[in-house]
Length: 113
Image (cartoon, rainbow, N blue to C red; front, side, top):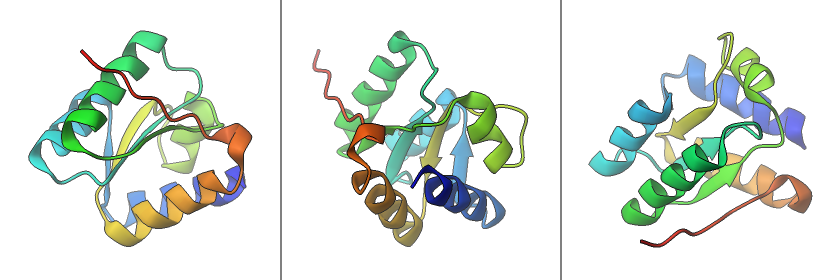
């Protein structure tokens, strides 16, 4: 299932519906543009906690991918990508569905202040 999620990330990148990097993803979440926040499996716990905070604040789901930063980046046409925001409803839903079908790849957390 990870292959499907990575393919969808590549599609989102080509469509211009993906924000890359923590600051861009957080800004997209704050502005209401982001519909789904994603993190590579090897980002730091602190970064993931901060991403979850932004997602909770914006009321959008946050998932940790089963791929590392290099695999995720390669799917997006970059060298590395650790944090991403999906800004299109159909792609966000398809990615969320792909990750929910494979429970061991899904890691959704909620961090409160």
